[in-house]
Length: 500
Ligand SMILES: [Cu+2]
Image (cartoon, rainbow, N blue to C red; front, side, top):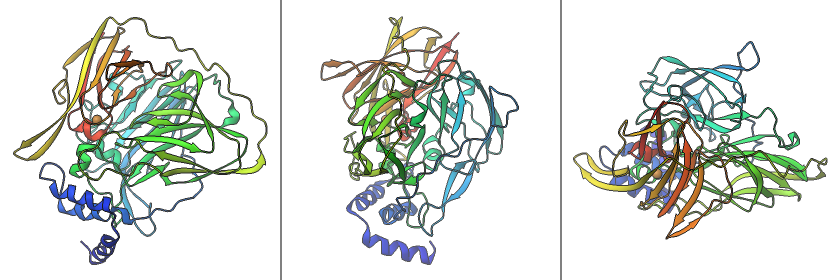
């Protein structure tokens, strides 16, 4: 360690919070094979000492440039490579970035478009992929762990966006064993598919808010995962919106804003409410609801998205805050998850121009017919002493991830019953399609979801069973897994082999 770095660290240690100290104890327990080593124990100890600037104007995400020479085609390049970010004053942070920025460029396309994106992997000595989270793309274009892109090489991802596929998707790496790290080091971006005829008034705008969370060591570097991170999933110290901490947005009184909220964190559950604005849910992972639904608060588990309309009807600063949510935590170091301000909206005294009302119907959603078969997937956690150290396992039906276990037939409706017998919530994600949640069950009490919606990720709380209907329309291998990325890495993943 450099002398200056050591001095900074020593000073910061004095200021370290009980939480940081708890984290350090956890790291001390870490053993070979669990990713713990002395270098980042020190980093973990001083993690709370770094302050990030707040209150800067919210930056719009940079849109991925379209190089195509004809309408209906999106042709572009995405390069994953090391970059330097400046989150805190005077500190350089080595990150991984798409086209030099994190979050990566916002990809915008329309239903019916063809997409051709050349992906270049310039990450040193690591395979990567781009997974198009939630999108209806062919299996061999989906960037699954079975199709790695070697360091220093390129490939083209090509697919069509079907009619009716408008929605708030995203993209991130999905290489075997490296997904969690590549994402927390900075690789994730939003992919918005727009409808040709959009029922949401254009006057509401369309603002993408990508939530990530960042842990910074005193020297500005991003520490590696500790044992606690591997057990609980990595939760950072700073929740960022489009890469900024608590940025500000200005609107006129009476304004309505369409907001697309993305939980692109590895493992942080976001229970959110506006202090002073009313919210209406208009869409989920796979696009608009049939009708708007008023809400006081929302829960966004890792991987999930929501579309809202927020109404700013009184002047003054209005904040988007986190509320407490107990998703289960093992060991010490449970992060303080309530009372964080993620975004501040300055509502002026000036009255906004009158805007159209939100329509009462948004689009039809046809419920799935009866399933031809049902599957039961039981999620459990194990801990075992291995020659390499204490090892945590995250299992589906008693097994850690292996390839090609489950066979399905394209076009058939299936009922999936996801049973969480573990001590933590697990957000369950299926590749290549959108599903409909039909039932939740807890302690024998069965309830229906508040609305019919297209989803690709659903939180399955501790002790809960979620039933969903899904259909895979295209053949090929499709992953399903927990979207706490450390849990996916430690085994809570399976593959569905879809036959034509
Ligand atoms: Cu999990």
